[in-house]
Length: 291
Length: 197
Image 1 (cartoon, chains in turn purple, orange):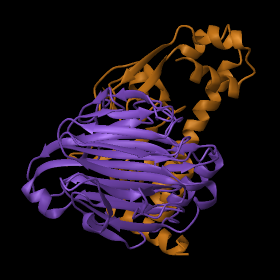
Image 2 (cartoon, chains in turn brown, green):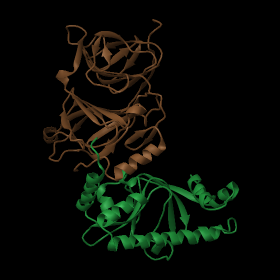
Image 3 (tube, helix red, strand yellow):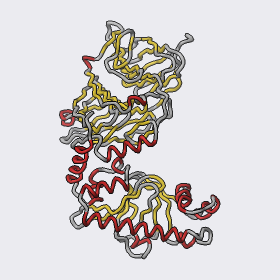
Image 4 (cartoon, chains in turn cyan, green):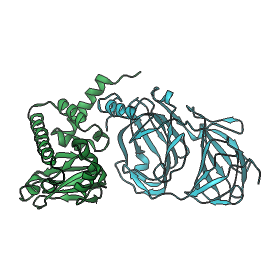
């Protein structure tokens, strides 16, 4: 095996799921499920594919605050609508991504989209909490919607294997999202039997989530749907071979390496900043959003 | 987990580690699941609950089926129905768990039982009792005369993180206001304090 291969550190099964509101049945891979080092990614909630029955009132999560980080929601099946106190709103459909920079503070709510609520059907999503470096934690909130057909794309071949480059730089193509620290994030769509290889910087914390299909990583590490492949920091090259049509979320980021004080929906550096966040939220400094 | 209660006692009394351990050695812990009802009207129970982790509430339900929350008990709070726990009469209140909660069960006679180990415990008991009366006195005053905003501002001082842990309707129920008027209060505060840039 080549010396600069990024070795697989573990292949993790999804932890037991829990409900977030009544709209998201999530497996929390970290920080709750597994104590793996994924800085700058603080949290990974994975709603593995499940069927929601049709109904009239949307399921979801009511108004809640965030400060100090970004929420990144990636839709694979189903559709989610979002409203926030900065006046942003939008709906993401399969392949779309909502990248919300809560930074100094925002209130938001997330619900199943109206038509999806009425028809019901398969639902599959990822939500990440991406930490912000201290100097950006109190910057102005921001909202990026990345629509599937506008996300930068790299085609591996003419048989339909390609990468959606959400953030970073993949084989010379710049990712679509603006980030506050160096982050690589891709959705790989691989046809059965296709084999690809790509580098990620040594020193970055890296994992792959198998959304669909099954894959073999670095020649002999097999991973199935809903498993998280977690890598050593050392090494750069990752090889993936698909043994069925596969969709894989790649997460890799340069560690921010700053102290963390986390409480509920706030992610800061010091306990007194958490106290301040609670105080500011209670006193209306995050603005207002109707339920 | 007796450590929380030992720390609680040590923060209020001059206690050695050995005294704290000996004084609490007869106490038991219990865990309640989220949503579990711990006490119902009519129950006879001589227990007080000291919350190690999680969140309990006491409440009543009126004839129309509406809930009225009397008290929240997050970490380091004590909750009970005194009718039952002190006077040995049927409980008037419900107590349930809003989150998965671990409590220390403090029996009615705990303070008198340990007075030989920690003589100053009786003073603490009196102080806690007065504190509880003060809390109730303030609560009556708020419910009789304060505006919805004054009640809310007092609530966030007393229970700063509960706005993140309980739904809005429970806070409204505790404050004795409608959920709509609590929303209005929060909207007005946002108008006053939210700066766009």
